[in-house]
Length: 310
Image (cartoon, rainbow, N blue to C red; front, side, top):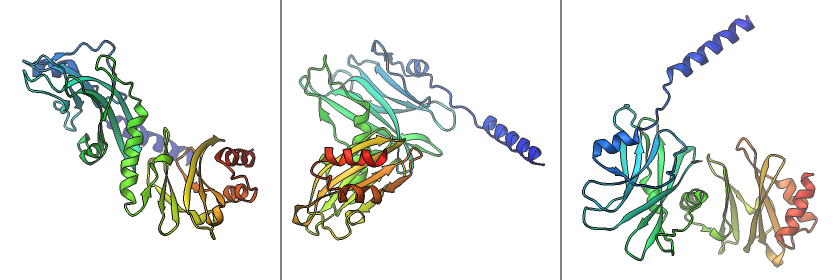
């Protein structure tokens, strides 16, 4: 009976997998021909990490400066949808697309996101770095998240357009997390200086200086977990934030927040993110560090945490 059930389960899973059609790569060349656009010579063109989003850099009909955008696979398997990133009218000359520099998938608030960084020459002297954000819609596929895109400002490259600034893919993810977490706690002061963003998770600190409180927020692609400073120091106030740091050990990521309580006593709170995304408040580890008086600085606190983990 057990073998029969296992066989039936395997058959069902195989049938389900076969029924789900694979996403086909977008025919960029065919789309450009249909629109009568000429592809721009980019040398080694950027490849998308997902098949249902493709970058396009091109010369529109009658235009002598490059434009760029994204093609996204439509849910009905018809022609792909076009999302404009940079475009200008024929004969205008600006803005110009100087290339799509990175495309990075990530997860945030239980949603599948995609960030695209690109360079736009706005005037003869000004070249800006921009980020555009897509979010996966169950019925439509990837669509623009206008609120998030508008929340992340462009920034001047500060360099000549022929030698543009190197854009790091992680920058777009970091800025998205800052925008989302900052909006989530409007009554608190977001400490951007102490924000940490890595490949799969992030750590933010918020303070209410008037009430002498602070809270630590950890997220790993799903719902963020906020923990009050009193979780780690029940009798203490949080008068100021001193530092934050990160330590990876035994398959977990540990985030440390150092704050000053009454009498200028320095204390540490620790949260962790497991490999499966589970978030925990490490009260025992925090108590051990604080009891050992290993909070003179963050280096001492991290050394004490490492000893606890060995």
